[in-house]
Length: 446
Ligand SMILES: Cc1cc2nc3c(=O)[nH]c(=O)nc-3n(C[C@H](O)[C@H](O)[C@H](O)COP(=O)(O)OP(=O)(O)OC[C@H]3O[C@@H](n4cnc5c(N)ncnc54)[C@H](O)[C@@H]3O)c2cc1C
Image (cartoon, rainbow, N blue to C red; front, side):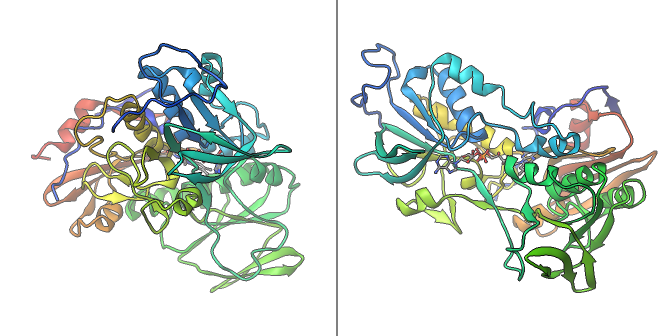
């Protein structure tokens, strides 16, 4: 039984999560205030908290700190861009040609509460011994900011594969506002999107709606390979080809970008595709240089944290796309650069800073994805079979339990238990399962 509702919710608003089965497998220091704010306050929690990065992880940490009783005037956010905006709305902004409405509402809440925002400014180094961060403000040179607790939420950076021709004009990533501004300046012509994940597919649809001819190249043989399993990506492939008019090249490898000064074509192992613009949507890497230079433990650049977001550096926390996180179902540590992971850890980091950490912290994050791609809705709760296999559940398989009436649904099984659910609906209103439905699906009998 599925319940349809006539409204759209974001991925993070899916129903109860923590009933998915799990497969087994600080000292406080009162500092001297810098004198810039909050002096003489009698609040219970008087740590000076310095947050680097004003994106999802940074601003939600600030919000949760206030909720946990930290005086907002003791919180400083150093952000190279402000106000913060929602990256997941960028495809919509491109489609509509309108950049208003991207701002995260929480920014105003923080400013009204008295949080000190230093922007545009970049943190350039951390000295863990003296608990100081050097920041650079435009036109003001360098200055030191001291902290009792430091939170690093510097996000990720788009990954660009080392392909000849990548420096040609007309080549862009799909990651920030500037990318969208560049793409909005295109007047017709053709675009090639490289990468068939959520970002690449959303970018392709938006470019198509702006009247460009669009081709999309994906190395794997199915779309959204990190999100849903191949049987469920088939209806999306058909929709993109037949209804959106996007030319798909699945299982194709990009060899080279061609052009003199400006890109004119993409050379793949199956031939050349003409292009006035090339958009790379080939994943994200941690933007963790600040913590790495300060000596923080990491795995391939992603910062290692415990269940409270604590790094290996004293009084220093990290979260979001610069850090690792824990998967709830397997208990394994993984790199998942997604907003709901940053928002999840923001709660734990805030509790720990507020002195409310007891036990091991978070049990991990349950992946919860809802995305609207044109007229296709994609949902996932828990693990896909391919992600489960990557996390060590080698017998994980997706079993299709419904295909008809433009709805495709699968459950993902491993070790005899349901560990995930996927649904793709074409042309339907928002489809959302009830908690009862999911509980039945996840019961041992299912
Ligand atoms: C197109 C697109 C669509 C997406 N859609 C979804 C989705 O539907 N669902 C989902 O869960 N996730 C989605 N994501 C991922 C999501 O946006 C990120 O996981 C999330 O923003 C991570 O939060 P963060 O705080 O770690 O990083 P960000 O939100 O990127 O914030 C980091 C901030 O830190 C700043 N910064 C970096 N270094 C410094 C420095 N030294 N000093 C000062 N500031 C600094 C950066 O400029 C940035 O503003 C999407 C991403 C993209 C690109």
